[in-house]
Length: 276
Ligand SMILES: C[S@@+](CC[C@H](N)C(=O)[O-])C[C@H]1O[C@@H](n2cnc3c(N)ncnc32)[C@H](O)[C@@H]1O
Image (cartoon, rainbow, N blue to C red; front, top):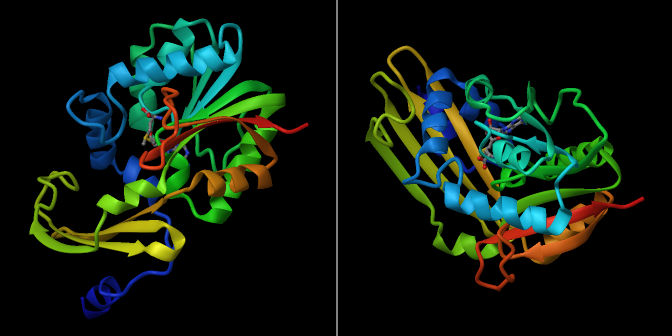
C-alpha cells in the first residue's frame, strides 16, 4: 500500500503509461461508455446527434462522400458510420471495444463493415479515399504513438486521400486545474459496479500543453489505474505533426462543423491530404 500511494503522490513523466485500452474495454467501463455515447444529455464519449449530423454534413460538403471508400477509426457504436453510409459512402468502422462494435452491428441499418481491432497495432484494410478519427482521439496519444498512427493512416489511404481529425486547442487548457480527490465511489459508480474508493490526481504540464487525469481505483479485491493524457495543440503544432507524417492541410476550422477558427476556440478541426 505504501508503494502504491507513494507512486500516486508523484507527478508522472509525460506519457509514461498508456491505459486507453483499459478505459474503453474493461467490461464495466465499456458498458458505461456505451451509455455515454448514446446519452443525449452529455458529450462525455460522443457528441450529441444534432452536432454529429452537422459534422457529417460538413465533411460531405468538403469531400463529396457519395461512392467514396471511408474508414472511421474509433467508430464507437457507429454514430458517424451510419450517417456516412446513409449518404452512400462505402464505410468501414474500426474500434477495439467489443461492446461498441456489437452494438453497432446489431443496430446497423446500412451495409457497413465493422472490424474489432486496435488501430495502433492491428493489420487493417487499405485503399480508402477518406479516414476519419473523430472526437480528439489523437490527443490521448504520445508524440511517438501519434506519428505511428498518422503514418498508418497515410498508408491506408489511396494516393491523394484525405484524413479528417479534430484535436483539442490550447485554449481549452485554461479551464483545467490541478486537483486531488479521494471519494467513496468517485464519479458516482462510474468506475465499478461494486464498492470502491477512487483517487483522482490531475496534473498540468504547461510547457508541453499537456494535462493528465490519473485515477487509482481501489476495490476490495484489486486496485488499478487509468491515465488520461490529453495533448492540446496550436494550429502550428498540429500542422507540424501532420506535415511530418506526410500530409498537407486542406482545411483548418474551429471544429468539424466547419466554423471559422478563432484564438479562443477549444477545438481544431482538420482535413489533411496525403502528399504524393
Ligand atoms: C472518444 S470515443 C469517440 C467515438 C466516436 N468517434 C464518436 O465520436 O462517437 C473513442 C473511441 O475510440 C476507440 N479507441 C480508442 N483507442 C483505440 C484504438 N487504439 N484502437 C481502436 N479503437 C480505439 C474507443 O473504444 C472509443 O470507441
